[in-house]
Every structure is written in C-alpha cells, then in structure tokens.
Length: 246
Image (cartoon, rainbow, N blue to C red; front, side, top):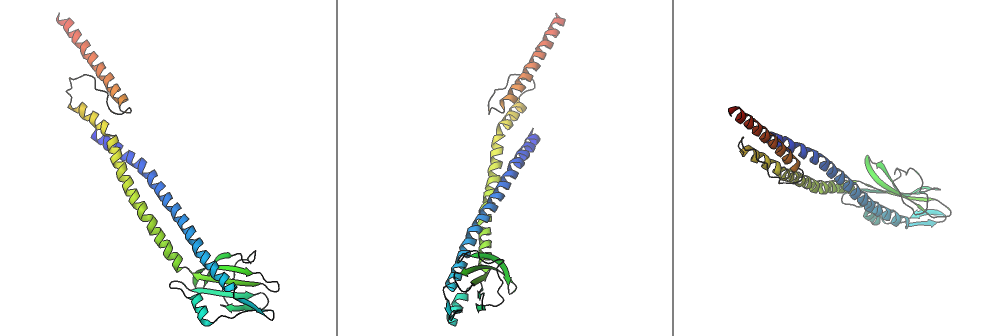
C-alpha cells in the first residue's frame, strides 16, 4: 500500500502540476506581451512628439522649405543618454531640407497629414524605430522622419522580462508546494484506512467504520462486503465441522 500511495501521489502531482505550469507560462507570456505593447506605445508617442516638434520648425521662404535651427538646438534634439536620435526633413520639390541624407525612408507615404507612420528599419548598422509625418502644405510635400536606436526599449524589455519571470517563478514554486501538501492531505484517509487494516488481526472480520470523504467510502463498503463474505464462509465451515463432530 505505501508503494501504491507514492505512485498515486506522483501521478496526481504530475497531472496537476503540468497544466498549472503551462497556464503560468501562458499567463506570463501574455502579461509580457501586453506590458511591451503599452511601453512601445509610450516610446512611439515620444518619437511622434519629436517629429511634430521638428515639423513645427519648417518654414517656407520664396516657396522653398527651410529650417533655421541653431546647432545647440539640434544637439538637444539628438542628445540622449542611451540612444542615438536621427532625423531627416525631405521636400518633394527640393530634396533634403535638413538632417541625415541617407536616413531610411518609410515603406509608404503617410496617408494623412500629421498622422504618424511608425516603421522599423536599420541605420548606421543598428536597428532603429522610426516615424514619418507628412506636413499639410499646398505647394510642396514635406515629410519629417525621426528615428532612434533601441537601447531604451531593449533595456525596458529586459526589465519587464525579469519583473514578470520572478513572480511567475515564485508562484510556480509555491503552487507546486501547495499541490504536494494538498495531495498528501487528500490521500491521508487512504493511509489511515490502510494502517487500520494492517493493524487488525487476520481473525478480526468485523466491519470497518465508514469514515472519511465520500470517495473513500465505496472502498470501505467493498472491504466490508468482503469481510462479511469471509465471516459467512468461516461460519459455514465451522457449522460443517460441528455437524461432523456430532
């Protein structure tokens, strides 16, 4: 009986632990994806604000688009502790107005004026996240492009991953411990029944007391039926012996 109990314990633990761990992993992945989605929206919003700020500096002189910004202002615009920011202001009539000439173009032209078009690309050998904004001008088509490297985003990804995995790991360990304790407690009535039967004398055929949860009582009743059958068989054999002696 102890060996069977251990086997049943392991079987129950396996059947309960595997689905639980799968659910925890799926929950962690879902939370991770949602967190990254909102963090990406936040960084994209900042990128769009930079593009709009740069678009507001576009002026037209004699029909030509120009941007007159001091070098200090451009350095502030491009400065970042972790990332490098790149930009380009392009005119459909006169080409590059200001910025990096080889800045990667978006896959398509923004559909509406001042509506952001976000895209991923590579610049200077590094992956970047960029936004394109089209200016509402009647005589020309101005496109403002701003992009930044992904250091802050990757750093946030790592932080979110660690923040999500650590609680999930603690929850998984606590869940497995709780399952082990719960299964051991659930099988306790079977242990008590087995111990009671082992302690009884082979000649003791009195019915067992039906205690414990409802799932154990059918087993107790089956054992009682067996004990009753053995008692009846012993009584019958005893009666036959008494008849022969008489």
